[in-house]
Length: 326
Image (cartoon, rainbow, N blue to C red):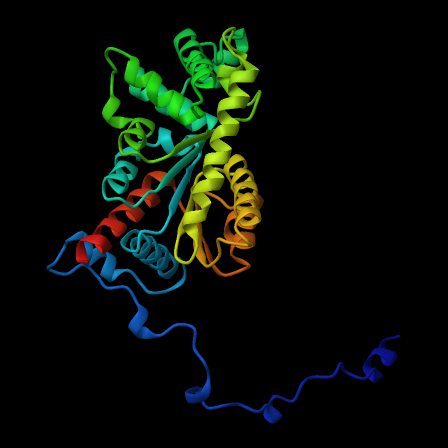
């Protein structure tokens, strides 16, 4: 047996001496030294920080989204900002409100949880309960004032022909003394005459389990907001921007349908706009329904991954800096 092993032919080996090489001067490179980051210098301003970021990968993508957003604002194109509930809870409302003040955001859209958190912050000064603790005894989501206040707002909205977002804003304005109205993005949008739409998912939000809930009012006001979002999509044509901030399911699904309504009614427009999804982790629907499919007919889509409380202020400050530079 050992003799047979000795007589076996050794496995073949590639002859590296025959390998053909190329001069490095003719090889395309993805990274150049000019694109590297800069260390902190004597100028510690935010503008200097932005300039110091490396011009590679997501830092480059962030710059391109910022540039597209600032350009859209200067050219009066639509900038639709869509929110998930976690974005409101992370305290970035002042940054978004600044973008409203600067005339950047032309439509604010959100899922139902974002509206609930915003309402509670404005009216009571706090939000985000302990779900696990409340689930044990059936008290999760049973806050009387939140459920009654919002559901009555929807009933009034259905009666007067308001959308859900407008109904929430008007309800907050009617409260004699709000805890923190200055932190409400819904109120801010309403006061700046920016369409604010809320896109409900029946049964997914705590206020739907309240005794005052009216499915008819929820459906009527939220469907009106869907029609308003579809109308706002018209303004995206040739240079607009869509930003999805932290909504993994509802807003990507709603946006895709609103966009197809807009294109159905406008001969295939809007096209040639920029989309970006900002979230802590990557999900199928934002990638496909926000970043990829909407810009197949023209435009660019980007994914910016990171915590909302870091990335959204960074983005907002960068847009402000770009606008201030002129």
